[in-house]
Image 1 (cartoon, helix red, strand yellow):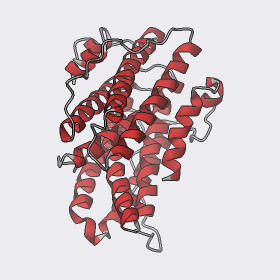
Image 2 (cartoon, chains in turn cyan, green; image 1 turned 60 degrees about the vertical axis):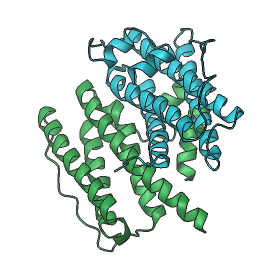
Image 3 (tube, rainbow over the protein chains, first blue to last red; image 1 turned 180 degrees about the horizontal axis):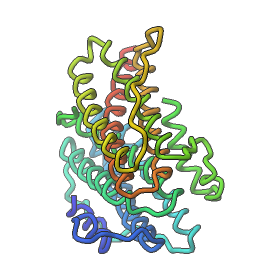
Length: 163
Length: 157
């Protein structure tokens, strides 16, 4: 999960909090750090789903799920970018060096999607109690619910245990 | 399904909506205390457990959900003591048996997940938020499974 978070561009102190190495104070700065980390994960997920959809790397029959989940991530991105801007901060933009050139097709691509969903789910779960403001706490909670759905669907598709 | 999409749509709309409107509780229940949140979770959790226990085809899933809920109940009891809240009251079973079709199960499971999400801001305690957020993740997984069950039924016609 941490490797995926790092690949998405998540840096300290949010990364340190995810490893349990640093307790974040519940401040406006922390909210903005969490928002930045979350946005980087959302950008990464949108890019991965976009690549998979563009090159038809998802197995046949799963394209609808992939399209739905990419739409969710776009919604999460827009929501959190709006919160940052509302607070006078600048939202991070997507990295320009995502490297999906060698991404495999079929179930292996679903595994890549599952990895980013697990990373997002764990990041939101690990960071949510550090959020200070009610508006972002509520938004993060509903985003987390979406991430769990994505993760559970891909786990079931791959024949992994879901209960 | 409509409610879930509504939530997602809400998140998208939020990008263009003043946060003051969002913060005022549009479409979200505005809990005022931790006790109110925990009481509602107790009620919905018991309701879902009772319904699932009657679905013969969902035996293993129902048992797994029940085990998760038992653990959650124990952890909420600890939370209630730490926050000096009254102990949970046993939720009375309804006089008539509630429906157990997939859509009804999905609605109750979704209400339970949303009670967690909408309740987090009312807790006012970081450790309590952490505990209930982790419970919410488990309950959201149950909800996703019930949603897939419903989607499979829809596809079968």
